[in-house]
Image 1 (cartoon, rainbow, N blue to C red):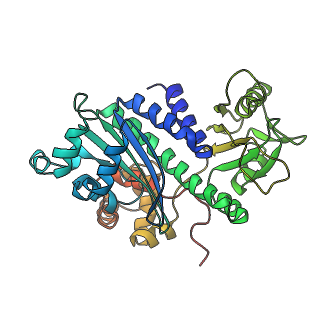
Image 2: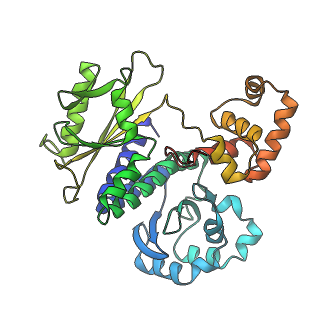
Length: 378
């Protein structure tokens, strides 16, 4: 799939965060991209179903799964025990002999033409859980490598949309707490009007807009890019997302902001904001603008890794570097220790994080929450 096509799917899922009616189209777009026969996205509140979007399956299939077959499915049992951000691929976790004796695989999957599925536990919180499931028909067979790669790349975005949806749901009861929660997000979040006026923004966005090298700022009360051509495109995206261009239905879009003194760019995503939402703001925003600084480190802190996995300071320092893309050899050189030492530390990290390969460790670290100040000062 091309980058443009992938971006269009990303745009659909972020748009659906603000308008639940758009989730069906978003899930259908994902199904089409991976050759799927259907999928499900669910968010539960305090153990009770709160939201469910289904494509490709009828109500009888969903009801029978929830009432009976979920408890008989080995794959679903793994999903319930898996940490959020994980991936459970049906064909990779269940041997053929085990499949022959699995009630779900033999009955429900056969009846409802399901030959393979991938489950993503998106959230595992005390008061909220969220999951996504994507399936292929028996004729299409197992998900191939490109489709699995697409779903894995999509997983962090689905997880982030579930997080944002949960926070926005709480806004109706406590707007101040919601704004504080958004303030903790690592990525910049801006609520803007159609003409680019900023009605509210989180701390990450405020830092980016205040930086002279960010490539984007507030000028004369409006969002502007450092380059005139990029400002023009941003204005077009805002008009398009708010619906004032009157050319097409409200739809989001993305912009890459190239910065003069930064090797890495800033990505800007404009998403239509539901008109019916109530905000404690002076002006009603119509566009959600998300800023992602690719030059800014998203590494987990050593304190966080110690608290989550019991890593020693030395093991945490190694894990952080590997999570940032550094090779084992380069990590040993930067830390000033022998390669044999870091190999020993890496084995300890694998054991404590329940991973087996460096790629699995990096994936685990990349699924940790992208929030600021997750560990308070000691």
